[in-house]
Image (tube, rainbow, N blue to C red; front, side, top):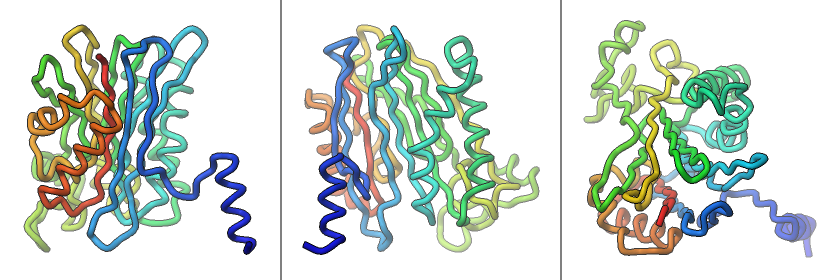
Length: 281
């Protein structure tokens, strides 16, 4: 066996992977009814996979946190990979996380972006949508960009994130000295380059681009069925309600995530596609 083959075997033995897994699942220890699953599909746009997923339950003393995220990179794999490794650590290390969660998340997003701008070697960036489930009772969602979080309550889809589209934030971008243009192409872009108004990284556009997240809190009560976190590879071809209806009947969260991605592919989505499903009952 070659040296490269031996190294790969060693990595597999200790569960280290050089590439993100394309599927996975897990469950809460606090509530046997709460499970999660994720699935990723590389797109047909001719570049390496730029989506990353984070999904795990974490015990913190007597509390439990469900930590879930989609990071959708553009012109970079470095930045979404960095976010996967550091963003939740930065959030949980905030001293007021338990007492002022929204404030802590906003500060952690700003700190993370500042670190990326200081250390990143390239000009790329990444969108992000994060969801933190606190003791199976409260869900806090934050996002920058167009990856989206949608909750299903009694069969009805409710969007918890905000799509940060350049044409919706044109005045803000122009006040910062930038512009929004559909040239080249037919999609509004910041300075004619980036199709989202907020993102991590993007050094060359940062004077005109925000990394300030929108944050929403949702109570997980008896009406809550599941939440979908997904990159825009799904939302370009499917409405919120269509996505909810597509998987509502599938009890296994990982199978639901895979089925949703397959439906997006059937609808001719060509972008990278990643999604996390968290089922509450």
